[in-house]
Image 1 (spheres, rainbow over the protein chains, first blue to last red):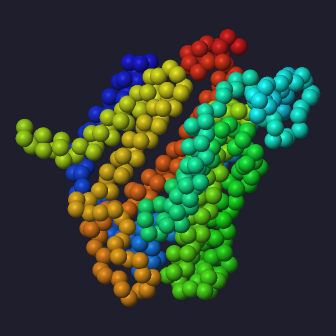
Image 2 (cartoon, chains in turn yellow, red):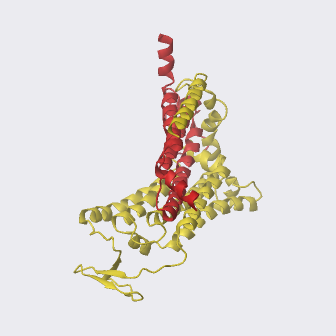
Image 3 (cartoon, rainbow over the protein chains, first blue to last red):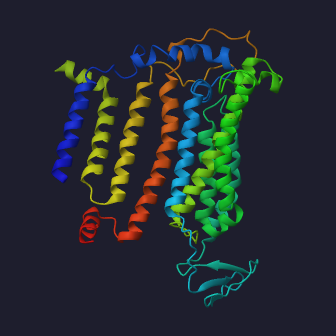
Length: 275
Length: 134
């Protein structure tokens, strides 16, 4: 198998090298990729959408339909991870372990007994390791700023590198960082499984509903110029605002999916302590 | 000889992406461990992303964010020249490809976990041997 794989990859590589001879040189302004459609986007974006960041404008406006189904792909990835891994029949562990937070005493309860949720006890697994004070403190300080930066990236996507995808990933990463530095139970107690699943769908819905709203105003699907009347601005600014609404939807969907996938994969669907 | 060296230097982005792609393809075909196959798939994706982004580069151009264009009026727009800004299209395509890559990685890992739970191994030959026994 190793030899076959080697031969196949060498053959593919030599084909690609042969094809690369006909490709334009690196950083050639006259290359085919930069000549047909892209000059139009670069020169007309500011007139048509009043968004200085061309990438954002192309992503959410000119190619809005593509991006909508891109978020649908992400949403279905989250759902697939859930369906593959989440154990539906709850097989209760034989014994539950609880740790008294102040004294560190661990108690073991036989089958069927449990302690109601309280601030004195936390439920732990048999694989429990003591928390690291430095990691917890640094993460506690850092996470609010990460989330603030994520909101900045989403909201400022019109004028600087950023947008829904990037900001959503940063927002999701802040929650995942919390789940790693504390444990998965603590993360889920703050952001429940249900909430994550609902947010995942809400993000895609915000995107689709913005498109549907444009249809109701008698224009094409995702033609944000139709929202001018509703938002009380001219058609060009309305396209810029429409992009922002859609980016917020994308951000919510991406954030929720990242958390959902992490929750399922890191605990193999059991939603115990996680990593 | 000098000509060949000049060509190789002028197109170095293609050589890097081809090398990465070959490494990813080899890992996907030849590696026995499923997680290593998934890593190979990610290297393959990285090669594609590098290829697309390097296509968008223009000499002497800056990132595709228009300068001094913060006003919302239609009057104050200076003429924008396409040669001053790199091609935004590959960036748009790869932006979504990166996030979708993370999503597919999640699904692949979820499948790997399910396989491990069933067969208690991630080595391909051992899984095949177990399937043949059944």
